[in-house]
Length: 295
Image (cartoon, rainbow, N blue to C red; front, side, top):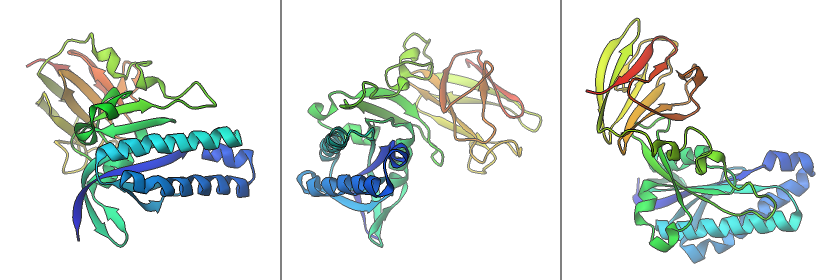
């Protein structure tokens, strides 16, 4: 199977279900096909290729991240024009990741494709999200308008990924991005600015079946769950295969919920995707708890 390094783009229409309910199916399908055709028409300008339709979006590839970033701007522009002309509240979100892909059966495969797809889960309407790998090869001009979103650990991956976001204005709404993009909640990167920074943390797991103390250093990711590939295996049916992850990024310890069925709780509230924590903080697991200390 042939391989190459490409920038993978996923697009996804936000509000498509609402649009289908608002107008007839035939009109909605026509709008989606119209946008898809317009996107395909501009791809050669950005050295892009359409791999396939994903229903309410597309899987595309580009020779490099700068071209993909500029193409993302054009896709947002095309969607905005469609929204303006048809007076419909439909928006697009876009995720980019650069890495090795495998070619076969008129499709692409591999972890680079999977990671780009996962990026969409943290991307809001009218946003473009890029991974650190894409960011590294983007030119300064292409980086304008992007905001650091911070680290994310996605289900199926054992290392954190730095994410950058760019909000794109929309003609029909002033709400162009979700609160975490600009620090509007306690999971944002902004709240970490005043937190004490340490290069190493100690996690103390207190579970009926597993008593364990382990270190997490700057740049490391540690996954907990039932799966044998986890850094800490907890043979408890209340835990998912890959239940949660810990990572130290720029001196801050982050806790990530990996779409677990029973979740993790901090100060009485369920962690929704991620949370920065401090020394002496404790999180409640489905069974037992995890406390953080300094070495």
